[in-house]
Amino acid sequence: MTAPAVKSWCLALLSCSMLLSPAVTAYSADSDKGRRKVVHVLEDDTGAVIVQTAPGKVITHRGGTITLPCRYHHEPESVDPDRIRIKWTKVTDEFQFEDVFVALGRQQRTFGLYRGRVELEQAGPGDASIIIHNVTLQDYGRYECEVTNDMEDDTGFVNLDLEGVVFPYYPRLGRYKLNYHEAEDTCKQQDAILASHAQLHKAWRDGLDWCNAGWLEDGSVQYPISHPRDQCGRKDTPAGVRNYGYRHKEDERYDAFCFTSKLNGQVYFLKRFKKVNYAEAVKACQRDGAAVAKVGQLYAAWKFQLLDRCDAGWVDDGSVRYPIVNPRARCGGSEPGVRTSASLIKSSASMGSTASGRIQAAPKPSPHRLQFQTPHHSPGVFEDAVAQHY
Image (spheres, rainbow, N blue to C red):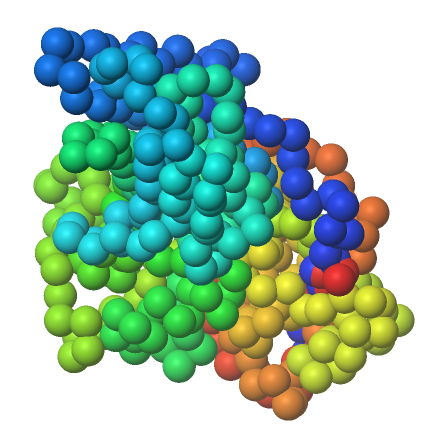
């Protein structure tokens, strides 16, 4: 019996000069794009520092540039600006904070992974806003702006959101094999992070339907159901995001819900004259100046590059997948999504790859339900590859 044909998907990273987008100002979740948020600063007669940040959230994507707005007012106005301290921290847990940026007069310092990427906006008196360049997946979250004038201080909060896509993930060993820390590492290995409840809820509103429970970044275990059925918590229960609550991070095992955002590169299908196994797909992508794409990168390409191809190819975790924007009968179903056609033994299975400039035009994916096929093991399978250039 002839083995199924598989190529490989490769990932091409663009040059650093193309990583940063033009500066993006702050927007609320419901505001029109391009409309700058007006932040009103309140005053009182106490002489205290009063801080106000943008309500709602500001939105950008990985690789972009974003302003986190924060303004302050103090009485009397003759206070020496060199005695004003501005401090930004990221809220990492309910009572835990990570230092991001601090300024006292003309002295400024950034911390950790924010070094070289954060600066004051300096748009005039009373402006404590910061600009974050080359935004990463890890930048997603809630930030605190604190302004201190001698013994008086006040704080405000800004939520930084990312445009992206949530995808369910389980390893090749099977479902419900990951504790929390393994789920966190698994998402990182596939160019993603554990999704938040807000991200999963948005994905559910957009049509994500998945019957297996998975870890989220806060340590809870949930799963989204758009089409209630008996196999997924009873047919007579309403659609929604089902929640198992907070689970034991070391002992309990589930799948993972990962989140990724726009790529700083391009995924493409690398087709060769013959089918290749996984090791050959890795070498083929390397010879093309690329690398086999990770699962998160393929999802990002599907959403942001509108990558649409009916040919399956190797990806980094040894699975075989293909992205569909325009559903058609011969390509696995009536819904858009990233299909998983096989989970194969790397040494004995063969497939192909994806190359730049071979993307079919397609309309932007609208609210959708991600579709997956049950993986199967098949020795002696040859496919193409999915690649990303460096």
